[in-house]
Image 1: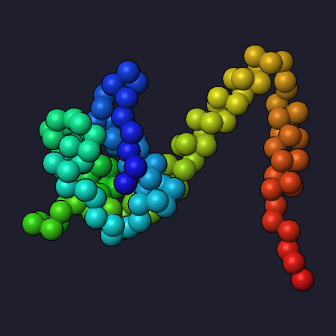
Image 2: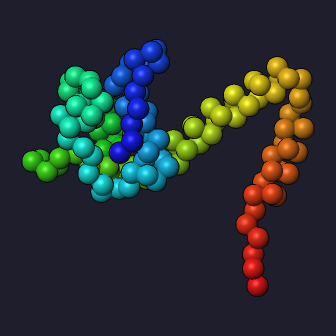
Length: 130
């Protein structure tokens, strides 16, 4: 599990962990049923207090992203699947907002952006072979 935290982010560390785990689940890099690192293991890896990781795991459990199994650990929840679509759309919404803000600063209208997206999408379409 690849998580990077930044003490200079302005976002509390536990929320950075929560957001990144949600992203990993949404992107399919963490799959339902996959075991999460133990709290102490992840805390050591990230060099943070274990209470910080425990808080992140609690938030993820409340959100239905992970589930605790007695004596077995913490696992990505099968219920994370509906979350995955919401999270993917949330991630894309943030990127679209950033693109629109930059386009406005550059004086590019929305119609030109949509046209550019269609052109780029056409170029990225896989070519079917016979």
